[in-house]
Image (cartoon, rainbow, N blue to C red):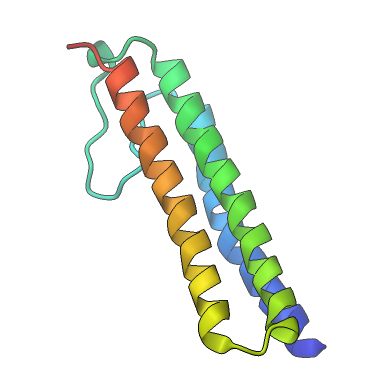
Length: 116
């Protein structure tokens, strides 16, 4: 039981990193970037800096919440499913799907909100 509590606390702390980053991006006044190493667009390149930052922030907050839910579900299934390979496969599919969703949202925003 103690190991489950420690696991969930660590999962919460990792998820909070993304949630706090999302809140900071949501409140930012200058354009933000979601990908490391990517330079954010300049203010004059965007249709709306506020909407750009709000959407980025919202996506990271949602990602942080989904990450915690995924990590919590995995700890539940560890005791229920005997096959470790199946557990790992489900976990990796969920994590990569969440990351792909964030990247898809980012690409969609770039197409919609960056002036050509």
